[in-house]
Length: 462
Image (cartoon, rainbow, N blue to C red):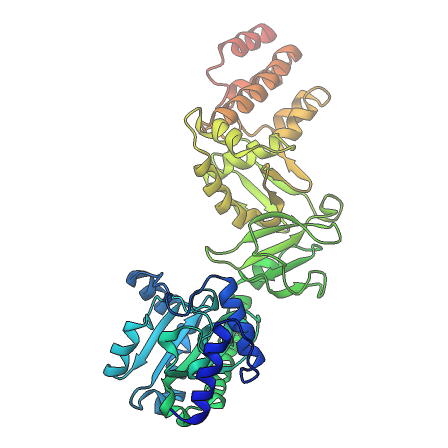
């Protein structure tokens, strides 16, 4: 141990006994103070091994730093291969994910919990390369006795935090550790340069991923004419907005599917485009007056047909039932109510929510939640016919009645709507008594077995 290290060791002993020696750097003294306040003991504490092996393996595969770990190893290979040297990387909390070094160094490291899964944050390990670099948010060197834990005072660490330069998110830290006796070969600038190189690689990966998302989803997001729309990543960053600037550059919290409110009070709806994001965002303020109607045709059809923003869709049988029910209840329906109307008393809300998520891929911003409802103007053939039953001519009504509402549906809510409309129209035909109207009814597939109307026709023709 050289003279400067001895002086530093004496200063550490004085500081830990309550004195404030001048030989200790202010950053180190502040770090020691933080460790004491969080209950770390220099002689009785060891970093806890918090992550199980299977969790460590998943993080080694899926953590954002996994893609740049080879770059870090390549940059620091000369330092990492020297006897007694270790190189390791942590996540943003200080959990070690990768530890590399020669066999003797690894064995020594295991005794002080310098192993994958161990938490080397300041709150658990006191002053250390990883923990203090993460706490300060900049590259930092901890020399021998500057460590808070006594088990680490024979080592010197150089560490640097790593961030995603596009998002600013702190991802973790890279650290090179060696015996203090060999610390002259350890360069903080080299470790910081490796971190910057990794950040540059992460930035390019993020930009490439953003471009792939724009190419895949932008046409879907921007298909709605006259509506403020945007493509937002799972991290909340706005990847594209039309018109530009109508949405903040980054959503202040992790995006969630469903309605939300901007700081200025405008209402928007988030639509999940894939299981892990991104999201389409549409401004719903003023949608009633600025967007064209959603056209819904469900009379005489087993599968409803809709037209939305100039695009026609034929829905599945289940989605047809859901859209018909929502159209008939403009104030909205809860998931529980939809489950009962669609599946009966045994219907499960989780099934409805899954179907609504799939339906939103077609309806987009026009489908709101909490409660589920259709936004904007909806023109449904069965609702228009029902509204005009009392005023329009029987002939005109029959012209528009292509058959019962979703005739194959067995959803309780649809059956009730279908029977009500059918009986009301049948009543108009019977009360009118016109032979032509009666004939049209009895010759249609839905009226061939209607004995009462057939008897009325016979009377009208006699």
